Length: 376
Image (cartoon, rainbow, N blue to C red; front, side, top):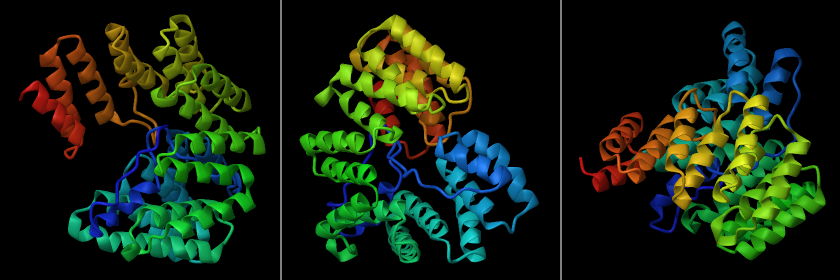
């Protein structure tokens, strides 16, 4: 997923939305591979979360937490799940409860900080500041409790790089944190340095660091998908290399969705119809509860202005079941379908879909702009 970034250069207080750097929802940011194991259902949920199977994890964790509300790790994991579905109001008390039950756990403090950060990114101008301060405090505690917590180091790195000095930003300190991650885990460290290169708008360095991440650990699924996503962007497209790394990631783990949707996007952009249909069929066979490849295929066709009826079918297919966590949500999908309708000249239907997207997400700026263009 392409990482979305927010600009903190507008004003010092606008940096309070810095927490948006924690989760990078489109072409998703990497989470580090090291996770604690649990016994029984907790271990299953932990593994499912690591693989991006949020709905399956939710089905395990909701009854578990209801039956054992004083078990801190269950609360923490369910908070993580709710956060993936953007249910921050539901996630916050669970994360806080986990910290209250076990205040010495670095992961729990980081998750609480990330949730506070996401809330800061969506808060009003006046309340965002206090939430951002709480975010930073929790991440600092997480690092103090475990100086090897690479997710916490990565979160602080992004904060340090993007926040202004008055909020504690310091680009040199950000680069030092990236170097520390590299010393802990070379492959993940190169991915972190690629993040900084992206913020610096330096695609040459991004490519170099992604290649180093793959070379440092050829079995790092996230390194291969990160490089594949880089190569399927139009600004520096190398579709053969993108396909190669996505297919290698599939060999490493055919139960994760990311490589499938990268391939779907590539094949749609290249109008490789038989390969596209095969990729979609394979993804639905192996990961039937995540239809992200259909969304990406529709998006790709919209971008190249081809096969709008096919794109319409893919968008509708994506809407046929609940989206997975950390994937485009229902509002995104209705907007996508509306844009396809617009290209087909079906403006009444396009307006209806965009209006639905706005009802689902009232602050959806892109949809508001679409509606102005289409006419109310």
